[in-house]
Length: 106
Image (cartoon, rainbow, N blue to C red; front, side, top):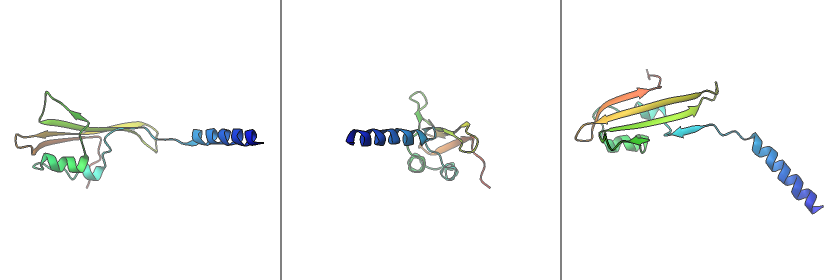
């Protein structure tokens, strides 16, 4: 009787685990609000407080960092990609911001 209970429980657990769907997400989680809170003249510290550590930090371009994310759209099921590239000046202040894949806030 005990073996039947354990077998049934394991089978039910396997069936339920197949029902869970975890969406695909890679890179930083870039919320639209945080991305549009970054402005030219902000410090590198301020940017990292809002967006976290960058996904790409190149040794060849120490003044340029990139945040990106790739995620599955819940409505269409397509993989979407968006990024934010920030260029700093010598004083580590934001000099240029390039946002890709974001809808402009109005």
